[in-house]
Image 1 (tube, one colour):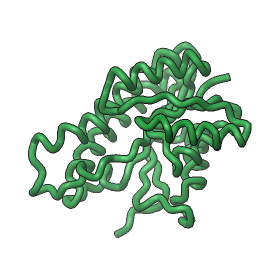
Image 2 (image 1 turned 30 degrees about the vertical axis):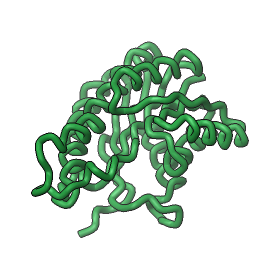
Image 3 (image 1 turned 180 degrees about the vertical axis):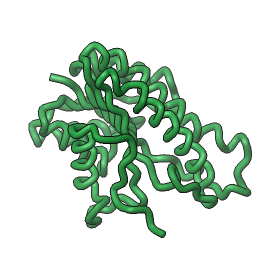
Length: 221
């Protein structure tokens, strides 16, 4: 049995993804800063007969994130699938003319250092398995810079560049890196961007392994 590790566990897309990959037979490692939230999510998954466990970590703290992912692999089994989809903080989203150099430190740490840390933590286990999937979820500013949200526009673009390089570099090792762009808000009633629809889309990307960048729906004009 292998593990689905979710960085950025929450009650929306995170829980839906955990359910989808758990239903396919994977154990589930939930990673978040909030231990109380993790307890609630693991209890919900247990009602669906999905084996899950929470691990507290902050993506801005490289050591805690590395420790959590290593602990998850030891406790639950080797990590075959990583989903990196923490929600950016509101203060990352200043207008471009109000953004200083210091304002970019946290967004870049969140989207780039956290991403690289998570990948480096799980990659040795995927190589031992001979397979793996690295899934990253971003908003539209990853591909269409938005001057109203400069921090995420810069940081998501950097994350996209890194994941694109991973896609090419790891394909010969049967490790698939992919990005899912969600142009708008994740809403339970959305035909294309509800948590359950996105979770199924991520599962399909994992199974089909058919490209780097995917969109939940076309970007608006």
